[in-house]
Amino acid sequence: MPVTVFFAAGPANWEEYRDPLNTAFAEAGLDVAMSDRADNPLSVDYIVFAPGGIIEDFGPYVNCKAVLNLWAGVERLVTNPTLTQPLARMVDWGLTEGMVEYVVGHVLRHHLGMDAHIHGQDGVWRNSVLPPLARERPVAMLGLGELGQASARALTALNFPVMGWSRSPKTIDSIECHSEEAGLKHVLSRAEIAVLLLPLTDETRDLINAERLAMMPKGAVIINPGRGPLIDDNALLAALDAGQIGHATLDVFRTEPLPADHPFWAHPKVTVTPHIAADTRPSSSSQVIAENIRRGEADEPFLHLVDRSRGY
Image (cartoon, rainbow, N blue to C red; front, top):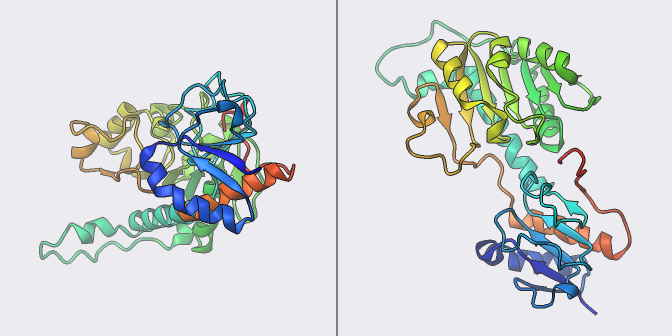
C-alpha cells in the first residue's frame, strides 16, 4: 500500500509544493499518496506542516510516524500539547545557501562602509576613511546550528576573525567558540559586527537587551536574520539613538509584516528587509521531506529531529 502523506501546510504552500514533492518522492523510490485533506486521520502516515497550516490538533493522527516541518523554526510547534509525534525541523542546502549569502552580503556591506557611497551621490569625494582588512574586524556569530556554522565558515574564509556563541558548548575548526553568560559577554565585548542566528526559546527571548548592547564596542553593527524576539526593540532603538550601536540590519520581527508605523521603518540607522534572508525552497526542501519519509519507512533514524526539552 502507498504511504499516506497529509500536506497540512496550507493552500498556498500546496500549490507551490505539490509537484516538487511528488517529484522528490518518485526520485526516492517511494510509493506515496499525498493530499491536502485528511478525511481519515487514522490513515495518515506522515504530516507535512508549516506554522499557520490548516490543523492545530494533532491528537487524531495517532498512527502518524512523524510531523515534517517546512520551516527551520519550530517555536510555534513545540509548545503544542497535542503534538506527541516525532517532529523534524527543516534543514536543507537551499535554505542554508540563501542564509549564508544574506549574512556575508550584509557583513561585507557594513565592513566596507558601502552605504556612505551608495546613498552619498552628492558630489562629495569620500576617500578619507578606509575600512580595515577583514582580519581586523571581529565578528560574533550568536547561534552555531546549521545556519550559524555555515555562515561562520564563509566569513572565516574571507579572513574575518569569527567568535561563536551558543547555549551548549561546541568545538568548530577555525572558529573561537564560547557558551554560558561569561562567554556571551566576552564575545559581545569584542564584536564590531554581531549576527544573530539563535533559535527562539525562553532562554534566548530578549537576549540582546540594554545591558548586552552596552557591552559591545561603540558603533557596532547588529544583523538579525534569526528571530525577531531575540532583540528587545526598545533597547535597540535607544542604543541606536545614543550612538552605542551604529546600525541594525533586521530581517525578522515580533510582528510580521512589520507594521507601517513601527519606528524601525523611519530610523536612519536601521535597515529593514522583509524576512527574505533564507526562504525554504520547494525543490531542495522536498528532497529533505522525501528522505525523511524514506528513512521512516526503512526504520532508520529521522533527520533533524527536534529536542522538545530544548525547544529546537
